[in-house]
Image (cartoon, rainbow over all chains, first blue to last red; front, top):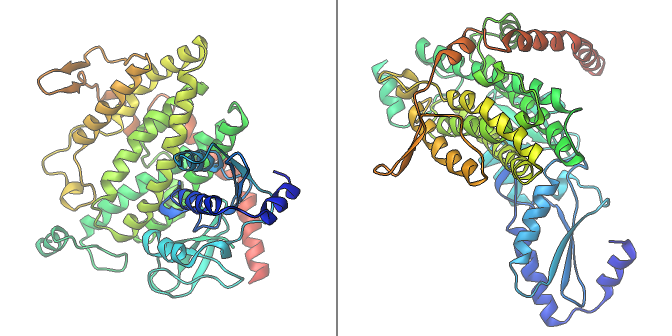
Length: 169
Length: 300
């Protein structure tokens, strides 16, 4: 998907049917969870950037990866296509991985952030300050720049000693 | 101890700083250390396959899986070290000296891409089933919380494993033969991963570290994978395997536990090479640790 295409899709007036369909597509994409965090939608993680409908009711979902080498891209794209194709008014769905804008942890919604903290004991780093412990809210100290994934670092809590994974900003 | 067991039976969760009977501390520690060692050894196996993995899609997944396994090992070593039995360095040294244990499946060599597919498909599923059974009711809080994340990620590995299996199963005759050979080589080690039937007085069950008996987990795995592999036209290398009409279940033949015992004693088919390579890898990476320490000192 070229950027000029993208712009023209934005300025084009959508009919009420198309607006309704766009909302349905949005919910379908939102039903897809991150493969490593069941229960957290990829939309809440800030992966969805554009929904482009053309006159044939073909739809292109523009997603941005948290980092470009992420191994989950193929699985996420498959899940999005499956979810969107269940809508009868969609003819064809394709996923485009966009190069810009770059993903940042501030794209994670407030709900997803608190779910990461409560359900997975995972904190989110916003800005330079080390995030607080999801269990006791004390300061955490970085132990390792990378954890099980390149998008996460490993910290320990200075209060309760919990090992905390942190989504890097 | 009676009070403590009543506490555990009532769903009590033990935290790192809580008082706990020493037997419990030792048992939980040994269990987490075994898990940490296994993740570490698993990471090294995956790493071996980064340059040999066919195709970019699979290669990306193997790179990420390597990172995952080392990351899990890292988290688990931290949780284990917090129990105050051994430091992380002591645990690693014991691993390299062949003094501690890691899962049986890492005492065999992954020789072909077919083996890697069988490992990702059969062995990872067995490991995930065991971890889920621990997570479900685990009385040690820090381990339970780490497991929650590990399980979500291992679940993702399972999808990659299924993807690999489907591709090779629908591939050429040569690819199918390669995979059949891999099933023949890895079926028994995967089955043995669950261990022999749980003893009636298994303390891990009693203290709510495990929540299901080994034989129950093993049986569930058999019920899933026998029909699945057969539906793709592959055979199971168990001459005693039969379908019991009355029970409406697959029943595995007798299991030879000798190979498992050998891996426990670190004298499995590939134990010496694996342990030697793990130790060599640790030494080779010393400069990275030094560089990181220097970086932290200069920035402190």
